[in-house]
Image (cartoon, rainbow, N blue to C red):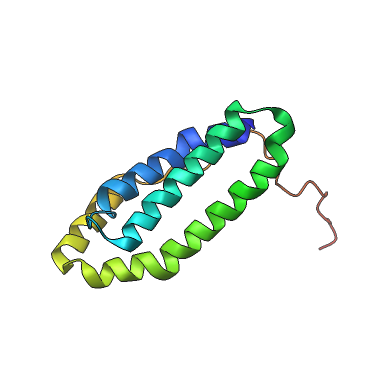
Amino acid sequence: MRYVRYFWQDHLLSHFREEEQLLFILPGDEKVARALDEHRQVAVLVNGLLNGPAADAYPLLSVLADTVDNHIRFEERILFPYLEKRLPEAQLENIGRQLNKNPHLPDAWPDAYWKDTTPSNPSR
């Protein structure tokens, strides 16, 4: 849960805000509305994890992982190519400049629990 809190506060929340301000700019558009709704769903799940009972954590983590995975696929495969076709070239260039102003920070979580802890083979 500490990692969820850290990643939400230090990475994902600002990423969502950036997308919403720079990319999700077609008012009334169905695909943009879906992306905004998915952002809200992720926020609700994260808040449920961080503020709910520990007994509910595992099922909610699973739902959160699936929701984020599906959202990323939707953005990469459908929404972003769609926006590239709908937005004028000059606007896309401006969006690119804005996105490049704020480089994404590396994940600095101190507990490297996902790293391989198997000792390396010195004979290789």
